[in-house]
Image (cartoon, rainbow, N blue to C red):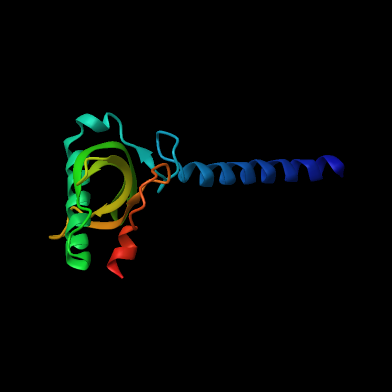
Length: 146
């Protein structure tokens, strides 16, 4: 009787292991990363698309700053120093941007921008703020909008 029970349990255990293995591997892509997770952008300094997104972020930040506060503290784009992407409804970019204030002090800012290539107005700046590593006292982007 024990042998018969073992013969029934072994195929069920094997089936369970196959199903659980298949479901967890379906959540990872060919490179072994989780679907929907962030991916680092390689060679950021030579990636024109990423550098243009950084310029866009600084322009949008400056535009909002001018509209809401009359323009003091505008930034000048230097370069994107680090970038990550995430597939959402489009592409979400997490950027670390080097920018200089009107006084010339250069700081690192964190920006989040969504790009929807199929839309007419394909880019939207979601957040722009001094990086936590930065000692810059300026307000966050969302604080300026309010």
